[in-house]
Length: 379
Ligand code: NAD
Ligand code: MG
Image 1 (cartoon, helix red, strand yellow):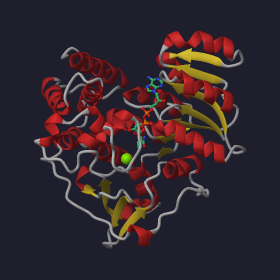
Image 2: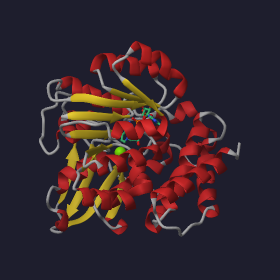
Image 3: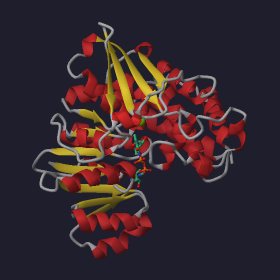
Image 4: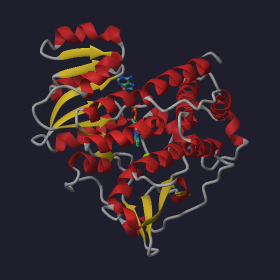
């Protein structure tokens, strides 16, 4: 199988390469992209010899071109699309491990090339679910979720979609699950990046602390499994051992249990529909002992509530939600705003930017840029 890996230097990208290393004869990495981690990119080029490489930041491209004369180098948005559509005589799986709505266009272009997608980049479905899902149908491609909850749900539903009565998405609660709303006023970036169960990229770690991530995942599930929002529930589950559950018409609830290890859903997506052995640590149920579940409160996590409302409103509202969130999270990571400013700014943008324009790629991109500019100008 030929692989394109968008966002190869990130947390999901690197773990995808771990799976590829375990199955070198099965995969050929033909194209990769990264934003600015050139040191890591160089190692990846040496180890996996891709033919096409795209980099977000342009100034770093020249030395690489002379170092690897056989590789085609590109940059920016065109480079991302170039990677997603890079020519190949045999079947290609595109792993989208980008962060943010930058993942939308390359996904659309890859689908139009009839390529299956292993999708980690949930923001693509948050902003573009209304465009992506009809394209998936039209071009007859597989959109295989990498997000652990959605991978779990896909594995649980199998071909019994019509018998599902509800989906239950589990949430760890993020870095601040034991803090009160009042205590959140003074938290630092370092505190926020210290997730109890998962080691992930910075943006999703902050989204987990605000619980925006879980709101995004509800929207993602809505599109992936064609489920009305009323049938998608969430529950706080501290151990992150149950990755999600599905309740069927006969009241049976199936759960997907395993160690919190993203290589498991990545392995599943890369080999789908085959189940390939994975040699990672096994879960010892006796050692684990007990599992806990609590209600996930809207009041404690206002961004979770805003996300679900935006999802239900649909149209371009999730684009506003996502753009405001992405830029606010980056401002927080840069130390320019406080943790609670993120929810303030997202709420404000949802009030200011009202739109009933049609959901088209052009309208998404235009609105996304406008909202980002507005947020950037606040500091
Ligand atoms: P990350 O920040 O670690 O990696 C992002 C990657 O995308 C990097 O390689 C970066 O260089 C690249 N990138 C970003 N912008 C780019 C651009 N404009 N052009 C080219 N490359 C660009 O993020 P991550 O944690 O790996 O998350 C990736 C996606 O997967 C996110 O949507 C996240 O929500 C989702 N996800 C991640 C995890 C996890 O465990 N990390 C779990 C579930 C879902
Ligand atoms: Mg997840």
